[in-house]
Length: 409
Image (cartoon, one colour):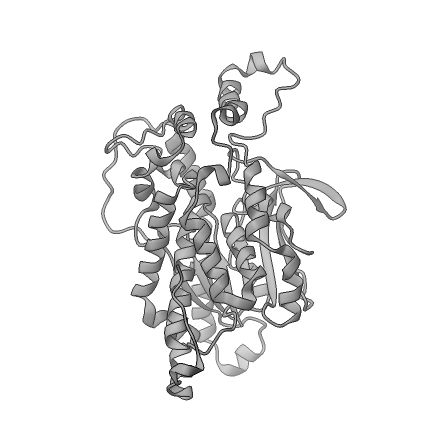
């Protein structure tokens, strides 16, 4: 049982789409007769939850599902995710910054209840086009999917919640401040999971009979691999949204005091990126420990080795984002400039923050291409991980008339 884990990261999630595009290409080359969904268990967080749900709802035609998601990400514009017009920015971001500086005055205005830096109401329309939630039950019943899970974090109670849907009963996994709830996945669940803290507004969801407000699922997500394991996956492809390991040596840094955008970008990187590296290391330690056990001891424990393949960017996405800041709509650039995102010359301060908000095709296309390149560089690992090479050897050559393949656009 193979699981797919798509992590969070706002616009950085374009990278994982490139990885999926390459996986589909490798599968067509190695096992062209195989049209099944290679990921019976699909889990996602934040923007990864959106990609996960889009893929899951159309997984009865995996190649077409990947091609559709790629098309969205390669032709992105910021106004598909948040209001980027002058009036929209003034109503949210500009007022939010004013509240930060003149809150003692604005607090007297009872109507000034600001919820977020940006208004992401356009995202709901996009999700209704990308994700066919009504098809999820059908693809499960037809055997194409075992489970879909997305995560969100409750601002109301502080609980980290994994919402999952499946045909098969799974024992709920409840840990300290971390619970799982079985229910149909809807667009509001995806909006909640992708609600970047401070940037996008929290979303009300029913949780245990009470309405709670949820934000980005990457917050307080100490074990991002856990949901896929609990849902039956024993082999897992994890797609990251940031470099897992930095090259040796110190990066050249500025001696200037960090501005707000730098600190905010650092905080978001901590939320979105660090937990994955820690969880992968934890899983590797468990696998190493289990490998030392004799067969009789292993039979007496509920733990089982989990095969994991992690594909993460080979380049710093912050550096790529710095080249594309000026592709953002003018009102958004003006707003971000107010918190320290410059986008001028070699001044890359604040690029980390911009990397999460750059829903513009110039940036997302480069990330998709990087995802394809990184995955194709590891073609042998991917085919070995899925066993496609071995299956091709057993089946032997297939006449051209037996199948038809197409390249993803």
